Structure formats: C-alpha cells, structure tokens
Image (cartoon, rainbow, N blue to C red; front, top):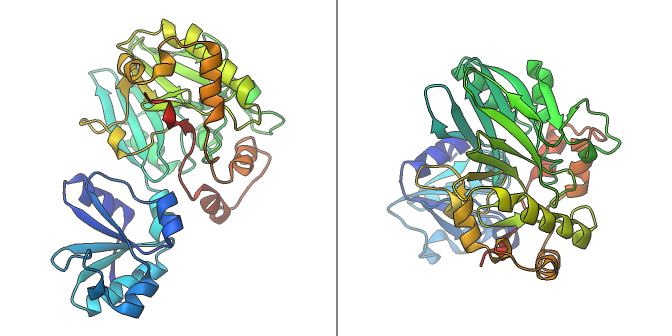
Length: 377
C-alpha cells in the first residue's frame, strides 16, 4: 500500500520552495482542462494503465531520485500508480482523495496588516477562487466566501473577532457561495444586490450604491460600488480608498465575461459603461483584489493575488479608452468555454436547489472560467 499526502501537505511542500514532481495519471483531456498549478510543480501526465502495461522505466521523464506525487480524480488510480512506481524502485506517494481534495483546499495569506486593520486573502488554488476577511478591533467582514465556511471561522477565532457582515460581489456561477450559510452560522448580515437573487429563497440585505459599512476600531469603511457587466448586479467594494475588492469585474489579467446570462452583447455594454464611469474614476494606486485568478503567475512575491489598477490598465488595452464598439466586439466575441455546471450552481446560490455535500463537490469539480483572459494586451 502506497503512502499518501494531504492537499495541505502538498501545498506546504510547494510553498517551501521544494521542487515537486507531480505525476497526474488522469486522461490527457482531463489533465489539460484542469490540473494542479504551482510555480514549484513539475508536471507529468501518464496514465496508470500505461505504467502497468509498459513499466515505469519506459517513461524516462519520471525521475528515480526524487519523490513523485501521484494524482488522479479521487485518489484510487493514483494509489495504484504509486504502488507500481514503488515496486520498481521509485519513491512515490499518492495525493489523498485526489483532485476532489485539492478542489476543496483553501489557505489564507495577509495582504496588509497594521495596528488596527488586517486584510486577509483566502486562496482556493484549484478553483482560482479568492475571498477576503477584513479584520479590525473585535469585528470582521467576509467577502465572497466559498461554501467551506470553517476556514473563515478559523480565521475569526485566530484573531479573536466576530464576523459581523458577509458580502457577495455577485451571484457566482463557478462555485457554490458560502455567504448565506456563513452569515446564518455566526448571526451576521448577508449582503448581495437584489437583482442577483431572482426568485430565490435566501434571506439577504440588498446592496445599494454608496452603502457604507463601518466596522471595528479603525476609521476604515467599505463602500459598495455597482460595477455591472459580468452580471447586472455585480458590486465592488472600495476599502478606505486603497483597496478595491472587485469581484469578477476586473482581474489581474482580464475582465469578467458578460455572457453567462445569455445576453453577451447587452452585458458587455454594461461592462463598458462600468469601465468608463466607475473604473476610470479610481486612482491608479488602488490595489485591485479580485474574486478569481487564472494561474500561479498572478501570485505576487508577497504571496497574494492582486495588482495596482495602473498596472492593470497598462497591460489591458480595453481599459485604455477604446470605443464602445471595439470593447463590446472584443469582450462578447471571444469568450471560450463556459464554467462547468454554471446554470445549476447559479440556482444553488439563489436558494432554488439544495445539493448534498457529495453533489456540491461534484458540481464544483473543474476550473473557473469567469475571466476573459484574452483581453490582456
């Protein structure tokens, strides 16, 4: 029986600058669509059936002198692959529960920390999802939480704070929100734009333009700014005029796709207006902190995902004053594949469907596809 490591242990190994050989034994199509991404990961894709049929020695890209982490969808095929490798003199372990476990792994990193304020980014690397915990005094605000709410409870407990407000920038389509569940769990208010919820049955407070949410002992406040385009009710949050939690409106390497409601050109026009009337009014020095990222190349040396708005403007020609027609044609005309299961996930996030934990895990399998990354110039 092969040894196994957890998603946390794999992450820690890669974060500690240890080169990690990952042998993904899934079908090539599944691997190309979605795989572990880290700057210290050396990826190999060979199926277990091929290792069994030909012997691992045939595949010279598999090193004999380094530990090999075998990965599959749920951990079964990778255990078999690790056993085969170990029987032939390699040193191999299996990622316990495979990509299913990696999909549900989160870790926190501090973006900024002062005497009376800390902004924590919670990274879910398999999904490219980003959420936030704002801490001040005895209070905390959580923005765009994932459905695994223990991570936010743990952060609050570590900082000895109470979660007072939970905010979603929009109705997410690539993952199940933990906003309502977390708010209910801690007795907090749950906020989202009313237009995002349709006929859903979730209790919420409606975000309005200019809503200010002061908290803690600091002088910070959170200002809600409607930024429609990815969805009509998308809302960004400006924190102390220094940090914009931008949801899926603007990313480090692109803008939010406008087509998931079936109105690509109409919503692209909304996004153009958001760029022209909202983003253009924000100072270049404001740090953009989005709800998603596209790859490990977007992680800064400080360990978080984000960039100054001026840097993003300089690399994205659609933020540089192009015409509405050019903007709309570019955004609406090159969208690529949609997020897996997105219509079902939207119904879940509106309180119209109630999947079991096992069903929720399956719904979330796969990458996020919320960005139009080709917009980077």
